Image (tube, rainbow, N blue to C red; front, top):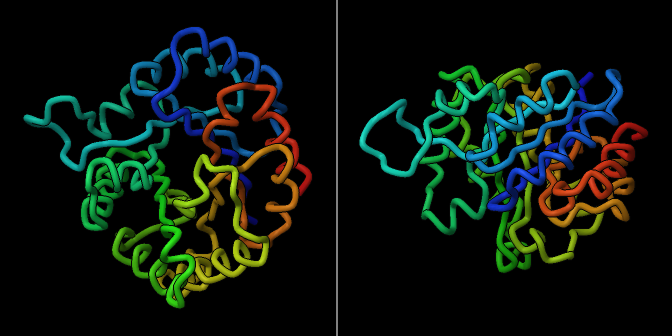
Length: 248
């Protein structure tokens, strides 16, 4: 059985005051609930680890450089993320791909860097609105997955997050049928490449997940949780999503 995962991506939001929200969230979690991961900005990683150290909530970074060290001003290596006490890192988010022109090959190298630092890699993939409207949507997503994902992935080292770019932060969500079709394709792809291990890799849905739509999304067989943006900033917004996942 794959353990469900509720992951929150704070993006470029947050300051020390949000530690109170994180503390509230952490205190509310039972030991037997879904896995919970919060990914704050790098400036808050150490504080977030301290706040959640006696809770089931884990902390992750939002990105890492492919190199272990070097002349890369402003970047953070996977080992630096690990040294804060974090246990995971997001790679390949569409905002990184767009804003920083990261190619699939760049993302693949970052996944490998995360593994070298003993971090769980959350690999994001997803299509644009034009690609969704075209006839080759699933082929485009499959190609992105194949090119971004290194060999040797396991359920302990990799999570896939499917985030349709046109749904991120827009309030628009694919139909449940579209989500099911895409997640089933991803699962088939993982099993075809990694065998039985591919069935252990969790697949999250991301893109305007809210308390009002989470329960329906989680009914899909191959949706193992969610990667949540804005709704993860406040405990009162994120908790209902966690609760819906626990009941799924």
